[in-house]
Length: 288
Ligand SMILES: Nc1ncnc2c1ncn2[C@@H]1O[C@H](COP(=O)(O)OP(=O)(O)OP(=O)(O)O)[C@@H](O)[C@H]1O
View 1 (cartoon, rainbow, N blue to C red):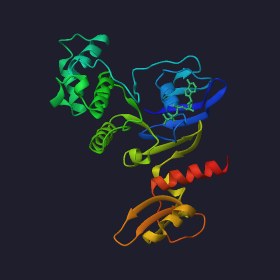
View 2 (tube, rainbow, N blue to C red; view 1 turned 135 degrees about the vertical axis):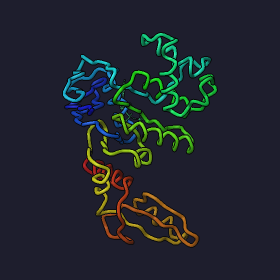
View 3 (cartoon, protein in one colour; view 1 turned 90 degrees about the horizontal axis):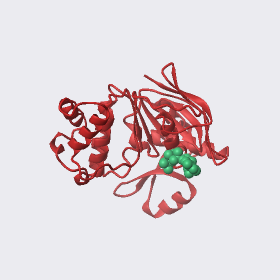
View 4 (cartoon, rainbow, N blue to C red; view 1 turned 180 degrees about the horizontal axis):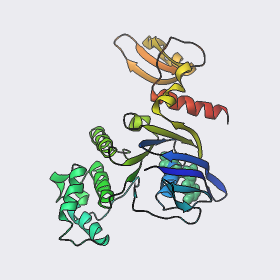
């Protein structure tokens, strides 16, 4: 099921945070944008937690929120950037508490809780206290909490921020698996977070939509500008000072430098997602 956002505008203290944003969130969707682009604001509106000034949010064909009439629906689960609940309770107790709040009988919900804990790969930690869990594990408990309500759409705000590399990989694998039977929206300012996960991408910048399309279409934004050159160590500083360097990798005798350039330099190479994203932001900056 897709979430359709039409003409969404959010103004805070006379400042537009989102301006006429229209997007169709479906598949495994990456919401990219620099810090302050409006990603969190958009997610909170879709989750029914924030009012807005104009536009509407639809679930499939059904209108769920318009302006000041925002609604939280069970189909949409939202995992915020940071959260920490009940540090002295065990993971099982937290989930049981939540299930009871949702109207379930404690004795009847055991298998459901065990199932969601298994879905997020935490079965071996079921009796650990929340404060004993790592940041990545706590975030996975957050997902288990959402899964209890059996939503079909999951919104993740910067899900891998602050995680170490192993947890990042584990978390990405989990999102990939959840993507098989859920619509997933992942917001991030890091291309690497969404590169291997997303089937569709939207890019926000300063509250407006710069792009919506497939990862391949985003890559193509940089096709005319992506070059690689082999630079001796001694010349690296001057190359960096005069070019937009997007990536470097060290070889024994030189550095391979990837640049975005209007002028031909080195050899043209196939663009990656990061190149397309940066080319798009650069173009937007040039147009003010
Ligand atoms: N309640 C508020 N009052 C004032 N300004 C706000 C409020 N909420 C958001 N903003 C501003 O709106 C802009 C967008 O914020 P938002 O958190 O949605 O961006 P973001 O893309 O999620 O950024 P980040 O990646 O840094 O979390 C920022 O400039 C922020 O300072």
